[in-house]
Image (cartoon, rainbow, N blue to C red; front, side, top):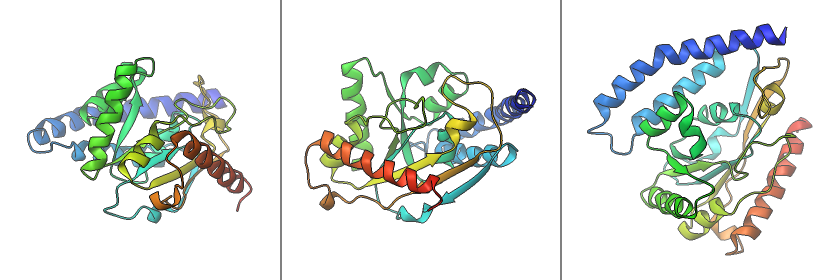
Length: 245
């Protein structure tokens, strides 16, 4: 049955993108001269993610704490990463931000096109110049009041546990003196694990926005130390979420 359901999901997703991408492209062209920050495309992608999550019948989604992001506040938003579905779930929160995405995603049809259209920040993890450019572009976004969103693990987990956090997100939060907004997701790795193509059913997807971590509570200028603390805190919250607390 999972094979049949997976085929249905892929058909729905491909048809959905096939129908909406041309319309999105036309809107992008019309807005391009005026929308220098590409907010229009970002909001369209958020809306499309929400619709896609709603129309696929394999899962039920619960979202908690969306209101903890205060409108007008700039954040470094971080999330654990179990599956490619996490991107859709985070987008359904409806926040304004720029994604930081690995360069490999640029090669994926439609996804790569959307990344370019929304002018998201791309990083080649094996290239030091790319890392420096990513930090500079992210700093510019934060300085002009646009939050950034990234997975600090850098890749999807193979066992649904949270991996080691890389230091980039925490360097940015310390240097820009902006709060960190932690988001935890769960269940996505069971539905579609890393390298998987078969969707499994019967799992509940959960998204929980935690309390922002304010700069005056960092108590360190060491990004590695801050990364370790945030990972421990998010791991604890993830366990509570799985236990139904």
